[in-house]
Length: 123
Image 1: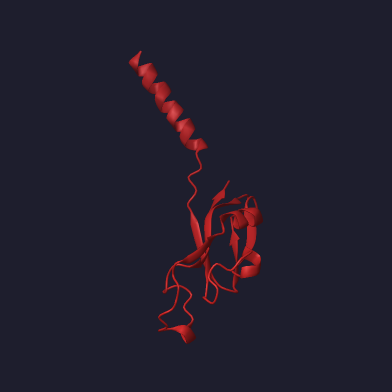
Image 2 (image 1 turned 135 degrees about the vertical axis):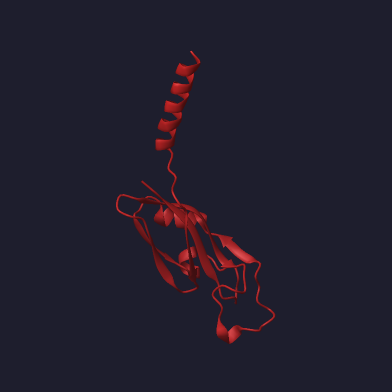
């Protein structure tokens, strides 16, 4: 009886593992006024995990003409997840744009911003 239970448990585990999507997450960072394609391989579909637009670091998308300025705000961002999901989810390729118009707002007025996107490809 114990052998049958273990066999059923092992078989159930194997079936479950084949159904789970072990997709590796991807990440893109696009500097303000840039655009980039996010893409999944053939028969894949983009699934946005999250996205932020703004500035949280002085080391990303540095504008050399502004280097050394003490007033760079690194505590301003907008949760762009819903914008990205609406534009990209379910597609195999999507062009994302890091600008105020595409995102729908300017969370850091006067600051150089960037868009960070995390996504997976579902099959």
